[in-house]
Each structure stands twice: as structure tokens, then as C-alpha cells.
Length: 469
Image 1 (tube, one colour):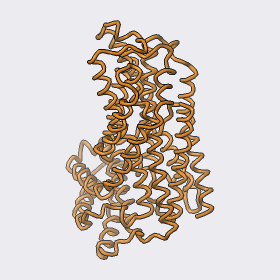
Image 2: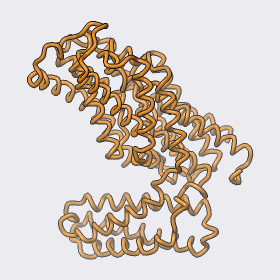
Image 3: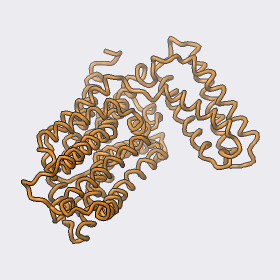
Image 4: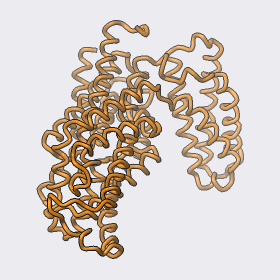
């Protein structure tokens, strides 16, 4: 099938099942982020809360776009895939997935709110570094470090922002909303008024939707890495688009880069323009060569073209961020941005069936196994019970942070944003003595260890599987 040997096809199915398993576990591992506050404020009973969360997680994957998914795909440079056989690349993905699944399942079993984002990205970076240790590679060339830096920054800042925003918003709410009922821990049987219940339910829906949009897209990105590696003829580029349309786009971008290179007096900008010009010229030659034998546009050619598009977009980004270029080359920058967007359409796409599959995995996973981490978030972060205002504030912080990150195409830790915002509200409510230090230590330890442990585990599995490739 698809021109694969029986062994490769079985390996492809295993890799896709691993991606589905990761999203399934992600669903019940991260359900606490959406339902903990709505359950512990007695706004919804657990079963309807989890069902609503599952449905909105699925909706987030369906209609949330693919920017985060493409960010995950971009973490592994095309050179990393090109340098290996199909079998080796699929085994690389399996090692990456097993590393992420092991850590995610282990932290869920222990009831520790750990980050699925950290887990996945650590596993991807680990396999990327493992590739760079192979003969013929330079150390580190198996990772797209510029993209890794953006992702790492978002993962580092988001929990700090969650804690600070949760604290400040709760302090502000005490001034704006003075009702003692909002700021006093309620009894387990007491239910909030209709307005709070509706608001908490809407927040639960929002967190669930944005979780699906962000974390669900990670699963979509994983499946795309698998498909590009195993079936590049079908999935390295969007085959529904006409490749002849690339010609005028590349020529116009080449003219803009040449204009900047010839006119600028900024040496750094000149160097970047020369580099982009060279990439465009090489891409044009390769693309035109492939188009001359359109029906023989091979898998290898498609992977190369995809890698070339990434390099061009990287160069455009550097030029458009240059202050001198912004001031003096607005027309050229506009041309480069437009061209970058047009050529990205050939790589930034996802087949509909992938979105359906991942949305079902994360949605069904959300409805199973939710209780362990929910208890930690709802009962073990703070010493006092969660007030209505704490639930509202931490929910608003989590949903808005995750939503903005998804819009920017950055994977963010849903778990750490909500956990840190809950901790922030607990500190604002009763001071630093109002948090349970043992739980906070476990969460911080998981936050610190997740990345290096998953990197190390994926590297070990990569080299073990390499023995059988």
C-alpha cells in the first residue's frame, strides 16, 4: 500500500497509533486544566463537566487552525528527515512518542500536573540531538534551534505569567467585587448562584476549546511528521496546489531580495539579503528543474522543496525583523511577506482525516481518567478551599493565555498555566503559607525534570531502535 513494503506499512501504523495514544493520554492527563475549577466551585457535577470538556476539546482541534501543528513540524528540520531512510525516520518518531507517552502516563498515575507540551517538545529535541550525533552530522543540526527558542520561551514564561496574573487579578477582584461570599471558601454542598455557574461553565468551555486548539494541534503536527517521513510523495507538499504557480512568486521575492541587497548600507541586512537571495535562486533552479518533469516530481524532490521553503521563510523573517529594513524597504518587505505567505501554503496544510482522528482521541481521552490530576489541582495546591473568585480568576487567566498562545502559533503548557494561576490566587488569598509546599515542589520538580528526562529517554530509545533499522 502507498508503495511501502509490508514492514514499513506496519511501522507507519504503529507510529500513527503512538501519536493517537499520546493525544488520548493528553486528554485525560490535562482534563484537570478545564474541569478542576468548575467542579471545585460546585458549578457543575464531574460527569457533565468532563463531557462538556471533551466536546469542546474536539471542537478546538476541528476549528482551531493549524499554526501550532506547523510549529511542531518545524522543530525537526527537513535535513533530519532527508538524512535517514524511511524505516529509520519512522523508528525515530516511535522512540519520540514512547518517551512522551511514558512520562505523561507516569505523571498522571502519580497525580502530578505535568506538562504534555514539555514532554513532547523534550522528546522531539532529544531525537533531533540524537540525529546530530550520527556520522556526517554536526552536533545540534538535527534541531531547528530558532523555532525551539521561540517554543522554549513560551513554555518558560507562561507559568510565570499565570502565577503573576492570577495573584494580581484576585487582588484587583477584592477591590472591584466586595461580596464576602465570592472570597470565602464554601462548604462542599453549597452551590454558587446561577450567574457564577454560567460563567464558570463558559470558562470551562473556553479552556477546553483552547486546550484542544493548542494541545490537539500538537498531535496533528506529530501525525504530519510521520506522514512526511513515510509518504513524502503524498504529504511533503500539498498536492492539491499547482506547482507552476510557484514560479512568479519566487521571481518576485528574488527581485525584492536583490533590491535590498543592492541598496542597503546596513552590513547585517546586506548579508541576510544575500543569503535569502542565494536560497531563492537555488530554490528557483530546483523547483523549475522539478517542474520540467512534473509527473516525476519525486518524493526526494518534494522533501527538498519543503526544506527550501522553510529556509526561505526563515530568511524573510530575519529581514522583516531588521529595524533598518522596516524603515527603508517597506515595499520590498511587503513583497517578501506576501511571497512567504503564498509559498507557506504548500507546506502548512493538514488532511482533514488527521484532524478528525486527533480530535476524537483527545475528546474521548478527556472523558476518561480525569480524577487523579483534578484532585491535585482542586485540593492539594492550596491549604484553604477554592473560593468562587479564585475559580473565576484562574480560569480566565488560563483560557486567555492559552488562546493567545495558540493564535501566535506557540505551544504552551496548559497544565502549568492553570496550576500556576491557581497557586497565584492561593497566595493572593492567604499569603505564601496558604499553599501546600509538598505539592508545589512536586509540580516544580516535574516542570524542571520533564524536558531533560524526555530528551534523554527519547535519545536512548532512538539509538536502541537504530540497531534494528
